[in-house]
Length: 170
Image 1 (cartoon, one colour):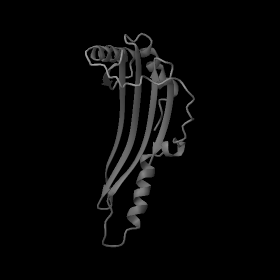
Image 2 (spheres, helix red, strand yellow):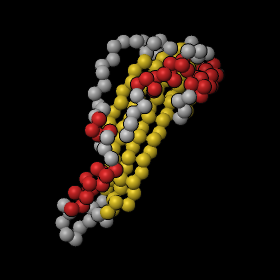
Image 3 (spheres, one colour):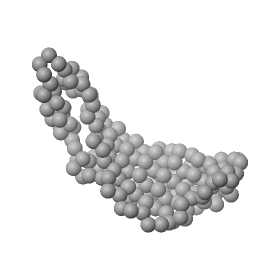
């Protein structure tokens, strides 16, 4: 499974934040790709691949916050989401406990991404399942799920914060 990568994920966020009609704003994008192989009665019965992207934008007017979500990374769609979030913030009561958006500061480099895990194929998952099923005692059957996930998270805000972190899970 391939990554969009830091540049491709952060670029539309930075573009959308340029002309936000609010005092402050931030955006969080979560992209998840999952390859799932399900098996029952010691045989594979389903392979599925999902690819989901969710963006949550927050616009802040004074201490009022508006939140909108979208599944598009197109800058024009993100700008529209910020416009809608700004309208929601203007129509909301201020939150006196709102801490504000994050200020830029050093962020440790992420270390939860492993290329070998991301490169896992459906054939490899089938081999794992085959090994499990072969180890089952006679008269018993295996059932379960093998799953590999690649996720990417990116955040950016009007104060200059921009961060990216890929992860893998198997």
